[in-house]
Length: 164
Image (cartoon, rainbow, N blue to C red; front, top):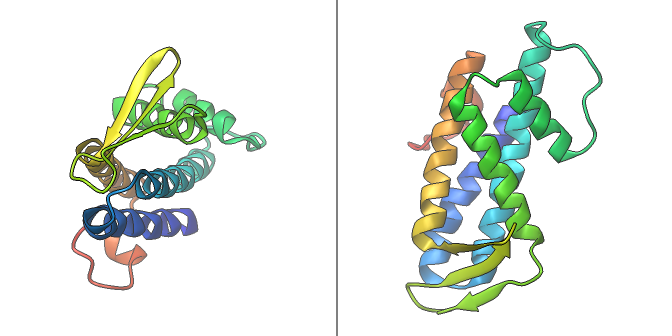
């Protein structure tokens, strides 16, 4: 449950970064900060899903040390759940975006601020609209995981945030 609480807190920060910080400070640095927070949130959600699988006796083993191994384990444990598969794929993509060396910055300080890079031979573009869609996708996933684990959103938040 602590992992889920931490995921909610990270997603609150992402919400603020997108709807406040990015609105007024249109830079790739803010986009990178958002990506970092989203990756952290996904890491907490992956931990929660592994713990849930252990509690359900679907898996009993040593928890992998690396984030990629954990993500692969979750993909294996929940291979029939398309939502989990898609979100783990996004998690892995976001991690690659953060580790990319060849990042281009376009239109900084403007509405169409864009981060461009090449990942696995394909150009990846992240702008305000794309990162907002990633956030909404992740928020829906958080709610799905909460339902799966039988946790009510009000059990995880201390304030009246309408998003969670």
